[in-house]
Length: 177
Length: 249
Figure 1 (cartoon, rainbow over the protein chains, first blue to last red):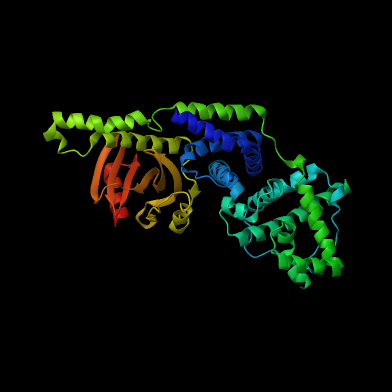
Figure 2 (cartoon, rainbow over the protein chains, first blue to last red):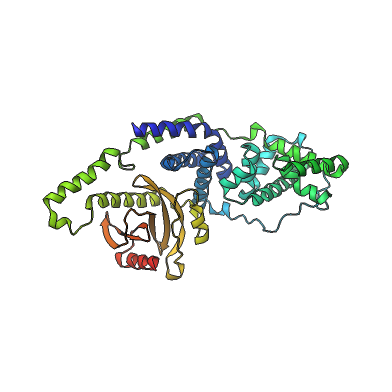
């Protein structure tokens, strides 16, 4: 009886978040089949630890487990994905460094954005996915990614700046073809 | 507000994370400064381009069902989360044994309960290697591993780095032993992994280390400063003992 209860409660909390869990995992491991494996394992782990979940923000709770499972998986299977070095010095956000080209995103198609996002180092990619697609707050992202809020903020700013540059580069290339 | 400040605050402004006063200030600046207003427009259109639904990956329909049935299978596995009747039975069994074999039992400390626990510890150890799921927080830095447990457990496990002695910290993991979430610390010695499970002890005083063997794995159990420890590994007993002594120092 107790076990059935636990299972039902877990399903009520975790299954509505299945789409968010899959989307995050898929963007982190960048491959359908691996994402499926990782999500399945993350859910089994979440179920195992469900006794430790004390209510509250279930998205942060579950996505933390999903993200950890992704990182463990990447470390064991594709460690090079994690070694993309991101320089510590803050990318210039200054006015002078602004690229003179104007990005006309109305003309950018989704495939181009998808490829540019996939090219971002994981540190930037994950905060962008959580912020833009999952609509998570800085606080929630800081909990899930285990980063100080200030770092979340600067990674988002730098990630967007890099994404913009990647898009401009890709659009330039396509324009020449 | 000058342009540099406005650029710095543009992202949190876009994300609705800015306090009210700074929000007003940046709005005022954007009204006056065309260059910044254009930069902000671009940022906003980048935001809309990334947040469109088309970029989200949808899970295949079969996956949800597969995960659900795996969870239900998991819920049926008896040994993993010892079902309630068993927990009642253990002291009863110990009591019966006590009447029958007083002299023998005086020598051993609650064998049934510890036996079951040792079994669980070994299963967890094996699973952690098999499922390629050694760590939730992979780090050799004790100052990264220890705080990671904050908020995940209602106690703080001591974390020690013994790399200088050849036992390097690999990371930490949340595990589930004896019906409660526990800290698992993972160490590596040559090609051997050691799992150390730590949780608050119910014993009033320290208990010195005892060694057991289960399924070919060595286990050492002790209690120190209110914490219960189980170290297990396929490492030979002498080295595991050395490791435990280093840990206790």
